[in-house]
Length: 353
Ligand code: SF4
Image (cartoon, rainbow, N blue to C red):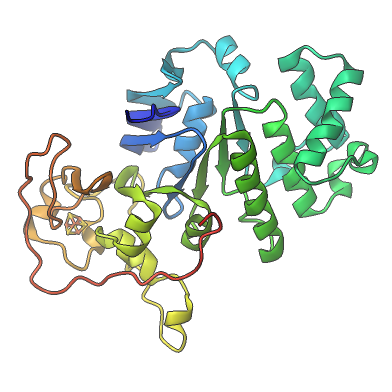
């Protein structure tokens, strides 16, 4: 029997309605995340990936944000229907969030240990003394040791990597079922980045938690994710297991992203960047939103939004020029490509292989 998803984002659409116009940040997004797995959500800046992660936590400002439709099922309950007080009980306890830049989220006037302990006092009804004792355990879990110096340090006294570990400790203190990691390594140098990725994999393995890992960096996503969604203009354009996406990409945007990653096979060759820039957020192109940048766009592409088609198993792609079947197995019309499509040639060892 198929395992039940811990988190199911179904047909989620979110707009931001402002005086200057309406930005459609998410347009019918579908993502399932399973216990003990890491799902990578990858796309350029402005593609909607952070809005999606924040929607799970209920952190998008409403207004100007507006849920146009869809649901976010966490353990079968729709988070969008929860009151703020119920959501507060879930945030930090069952779902934790790690942000890109810990400096912006840690309280500069409060010792790091106390910031972690506050989560435990609020969600687990512990006294301050009990919470601080448990915080020492949590610091050990995030590999900061049973270290009283960290406990009593203020954020400005910690390095970037230590601050990110404190942030992870805050998010993971109550052993949530789901961690949302929004570009958690982007602000870190490469060696610290690797340590943080290893730490997330360790928490996933030891606690069987699910992680939504948001990043613009394909190499990082390749190294950590079990399954991947590629997002463009608020739409998931391709989705599948890591190997589906990195070794058998079908969507021209995915292929373009892969061809722009520096890998050993590219040495001595110019990288192929995806041409053009992401559209004006107030005006999403008609039909397939990628059509102004797509090297194989056909006439139909600017007129009709492509349906999701399954290429194999759970590998899906939204492109008029990819052959596949609908969810119920019906073949979908496609416009064949006569030239050979460029295939990404991605190398590197995944961290959890
Ligand atoms: Fe390119 Fe058309 Fe496919 Fe969009 S639907 S990615 S424009 S070929």
